[in-house]
Image 1 (cartoon, rainbow, N blue to C red):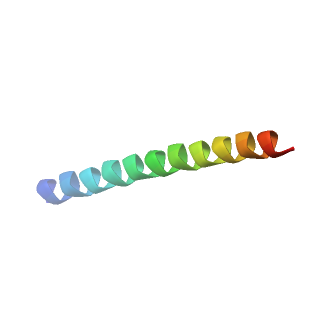
Image 2: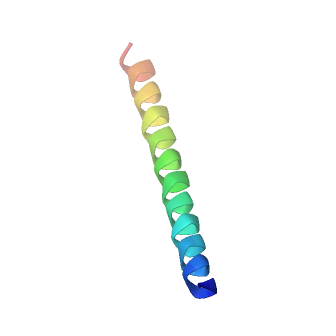
Length: 41
């Protein structure tokens, strides 16, 4: 029971990490996109 709970916690932490990674990646793409549009205009 305790082992299963710990396993679930590990999955949650990993998922959280991926979410932050995705968010950081999206922000970088957005920033590059804004810079590109600023250069084009």
